[in-house]
Image (cartoon, rainbow, N blue to C red; front, top):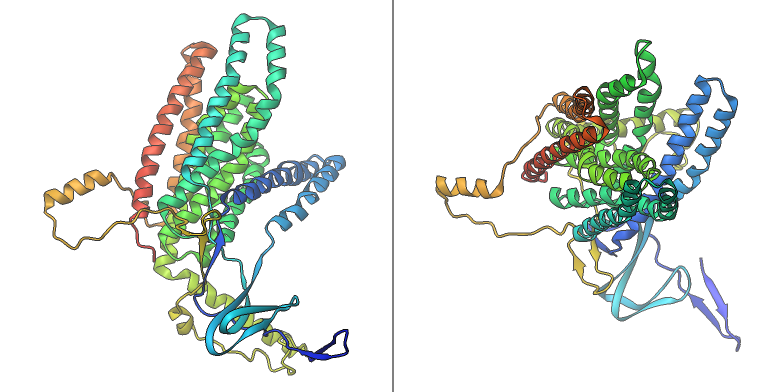
Length: 524
């Protein structure tokens, strides 16, 4: 469209139109400024909103329907609707408008812009602009920062616990009440960091160890899927499993059975189903483990909020102990168990090329849908006829042989402007020299033990369930054993803490070996 303007003296000027949108060049490399803590705050808001949606919204609706309480149902409906707009706003798809000026002898030095004005270049350039999805890479805080904050949380929590312990030992209830009230606000503020920082510390750790460059929107989708899997697991644990138990059982027995049977089976199955949502994008076992581990962290994040709120109400002592035990125990446990399930699913996808087969099915469904709708006289593709899908129709062989390509995104240090390695991975030279058997043995010794999960997806899922059940079941069993031995409440607590320490040590050793095994696998 021709645009003409007239200046104050009456002169007329013909304005050039901006360059039209074009297709993005293949494999273009883009970069964004590194802002690692932005992702933390976004996911922190997400989990709080998801907690409200699940615990006070959907769960209350279900309870209201079961017990025929219309007030509960209405309250749950309100709590379900309030978080949705904010969640959608936080995770709405983002597009990037890229403008590219390339030096060219036949180009120009001025290029009109869509918002007005023009771009002036020192030499002649050809100007292109295009829109692409925001595929910026996952940008997480450095490990030292997040683990350092975790240590600070434990230290501050321990410091806040000292006055409570002293007041408990004094036996003066008035002093105890005053100390509890004074420390309540700091404890609640500490709780916000206590439930989230350990999860992000493990997220950053796993991303670095696994070493796969990951798009931020993909990683956030995996974690949100893990949060969502908490709802059906909660329904199983709170409503369905207790209904299936025989009557006459004590409350403690029901809780023990729920922790040992219902929680491992229900939670691991629904976390596995959450991984299945991403089956079209899973290419290999290494990526399957990464997705599974992140889904497990998403589940742990929303579960951790529940535990931390409960422990925070008990004061700094319970908050600090809960944060420590869950931060280095239950949280990586959820990640590891679900990661094993994801490994099996990834191996299945790798050996059957499931992602390409599903792409073929979705492609065929899309084409058939266009054909069907246009047969009813509706011009879906806007080409002026009703001949159906007129674009290229790839064959099954073409889809299976197609290589995936995507834009490459990097990170730029916001202070120095230099490109940074978002994975923070060490690189080493590859030697082609021959080694002796003794040297190879020494290399393996230095590298440490590697563990690879089974290649069968169902065996991996069973292992995840058994690992979860062993953790919960032995924890309940140790508590029961202490009571049978008559150790008293103090003795039971010490025995339970000692056993948790054994579980955590074993878990971390196994997790380290599994990470090394997964890391040794090829990227593709």
